[in-house]
Image (cartoon, rainbow, N blue to C red):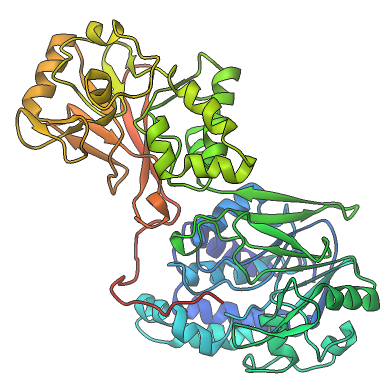
Length: 540
């Protein structure tokens, strides 16, 4: 069946359904039933070792993180412009398993030669009843019918794929019962994933640093060493085994002297792990390259990249996240390349003392083997501006006001090239917070002050300001108004510390000084399951 060989009416219906699904809107139960019945006919004709032509983009686990799947398509290209091979685990754990797997099946129906969807260990009746997909179907449809429709369809998903006879793709790993690809081609896959045996092993096994076969800590499948993968590749004329199944912090990980690669395509897995995601692009010549993606890129994607968009960042580029080095280096590089287009203010974490406690120092040691890069950056932080003024109307800073500062000239006149002091006006600018109570208050942070609406109104009046924009505080919607919309807090780190579940935002100010907020999140909180119901720990 060719890309455009579907009947016209069917094509129109599928295009409408794909458009609806791309907006994260689920199909009706009847639409899902019809879609899966037709998809079953296509999948029945595919092999246990499905041949795939290059070029193709190979993807790992998605786990219901629909908005990250949409980002994957934005980065890698949409079907049918890009050919895709997905290696399983479309459901469970994420909040949008229904929309994720429905979209992939719809794309398979619409472009059957352009997309291959393999089975993962989570495409299983037993696993999905424990890790979220079953409960999500109950919540979204009021019954288990859609869950049953999909889990019946999962039995027909191919188990492995072979790209141009060179790259063997599967969800898990190898099996002591399988020596050749013909062994895989010859068994019946249309069944629930067994608890043991070769089919189970293909979906559950993992590569290991130790030679030979080992007992898997997952309780299913095996671990296999470099000697095993080398023998399998040699016996089957393969150059590479590509697989998914394991969280890897950089989105991909080589093993067995680059004869095995793990690809993981769910960034910030489970909305808390802080990992990057990746996809593997294989071109017509079988050359391959990885594309990684994560949250900082999302901010620039939404707001636009320099120099097309002018940016003002209000501090705290480092600490707590796993990529402080890359984040601050990118911002400094952009400042060098487009000095008039980007302003980077100092935050309270751009400090020698704070970074030794909250992660940046340790990250530099880990990535460079010494503290030299940490020292280079903390010396540079002393030169970052403390505040900014947008068109004489919007006063921007990291923290808040100070009882020692009445006018902007007070700020202009003191020496900022120093470590952030423990007290005084410079400290206050980076540490203070607005408060519902009037006047000045003692800050619970141990540095800076709290300041009330009377203070901010007086400061704005004295300096001809319309708004104070600041950062420094986690706010769940990404921004928060205070003091009758004379002060706004903006927070641009979604799901802060990989566990807070907050949205992030940026504030856009146009030529006429009109302003609007754009919110973004690694995983939108609409329709979240009841978080009081704890799912079992799962590190397998």
